[in-house]
Length: 54
Image (cartoon, rainbow, N blue to C red; front, side, top):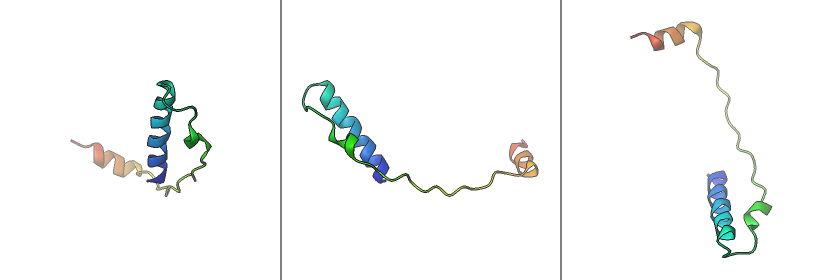
């Protein structure tokens, strides 16, 4: 969620720079932690075949 909000704010400020409404994008100075993703395992061959069956 934090990463999403940061991206929206960074993009909004970048647009404001382009339109010469602000002088700099301070959101670029902020370092946001990389989210932790749980890595799952893929399907087995049998599971994939079952999923693709009509």
